[in-house]
Length: 358
Ligand SMILES: Nc1ncnc2c1ncn2[C@@H]1O[C@H](COP(=O)(O)OP(=O)(O)OP(=O)(O)O)[C@@H](O)[C@H]1O
Image (tube, rainbow, N blue to C red):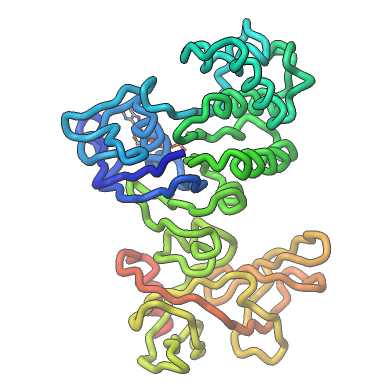
């Protein structure tokens, strides 16, 4: 397996930028998810890595070799990269075993070794009993496992996965998460996984690159994205909760800035001395009768074991968990704790709202 580096990578289509100045280092064996809304450039980054597109500027290095850059281009078939598509891309007229053996045939691996490696890959993906079936005789999840086995069998330098679960129903997606995690643990493959499903990205990846409009906004471990988002976009896109403008008080309590949220001074975790917003996760909210901040219950959903409340507070929608059912329209007290504050000068609309509390 190999490390993968993007340096100042840009791609334009007919002069329109799809990727702008992407810089990221992915360690050998790391599982990285590319997460972002439709059109943000995830698939373009994957296609550049695979060699299906050429960059407009910048370089891609794989295992210390420049595979794309100025006057340098290694074609897809020579990159030793495995790809798993949403559509499975299996040969319909070949059996499961023949599909999995295909990359070895292309590489002219001798028959005996081929059989061993195919059998190993089928065992690892739980497909040993399906070796002689045709793809049409398999479920969607089983087909995707064949695609994984076909990657695994030739020991690629990296594996690229383009929304591999998008065609599967919810229950199957959840069980396939375990298959991908197992696949990654066993193969130690460097994996780049495209998804617009944040739950999937947070559950599977060592690190997640959150993208918007052709740029990486933040590239970090799932828990860092959730607890310490760098800007309003990441805070709003990843995880549940609200992003709320704050007024700086200039005061610090135990090295943490004190910000004014909904008219109340609250201590916040922060990497900046000039926060403009806070991310309020459900875990940061305790419902207390004596709390000064008040919210009106907009919705109450039973999640099994607890209730998820949406609360309207001064025009912002907060999310809280409660142990008892709340009535729609009921007013509750909101105690805030362990907030994350950050500086986002680009968020003009939210900044404008913050003036209302000033
Ligand atoms: N071959 C192409 N020609 C012209 N424009 C393209 C081409 N491929 C992608 N684009 C544009 O580049 C931008 C990024 O597209 P891309 O497919 O990478 O986004 P994405 O994040 O993968 O979106 P989705 O989640 O919808 O698949 C989009 O504006 C898209 O229209």
